[in-house]
Amino acid sequence: MAMFALPFSAVFSQEMQVTISAGNNSIIVFPDNEDSTKLLVIDALQSSANKAFTIHVTNDNRDKDWKRSFAIYDSADNVLHDFVLMKDGNYCIKLSQLATLHTEEEYFIYTVAIPKDPQKAMLVKVARTLVCKFKIR
Image (cartoon, rainbow, N blue to C red):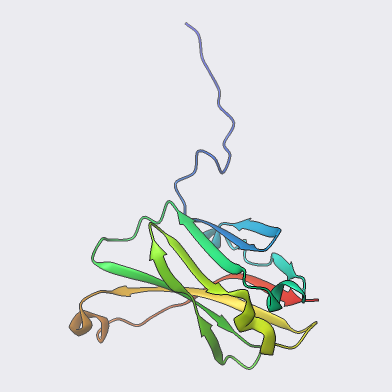
């Protein structure tokens, strides 16, 4: 009788995977796995270009009646920008929108999921999840 052992890795995992990209820089995080300490560094010159700051989500196992959103927060917990859902788990904003942010200051990307039905959404306590941190240099 032959037995096979397969090593566990993120490739076989069904947890949500988020790829964040800005210009030539990107990181992959698993927010449900407290992987949110990763820091994405964005070149200040890229923030003035007409490029996109993108988020791609895979293995988002939420109910189809719920919607996910992503937003950028500053260290004072203020929402600065919301990512726009494009399609198929892709969200983006233009890097030029980051031109007003201060260099070397840390910013945070959070995600939340809420019911699509506004009546149900009012009854849910929203818990946001830190996806990653980023800094402009």
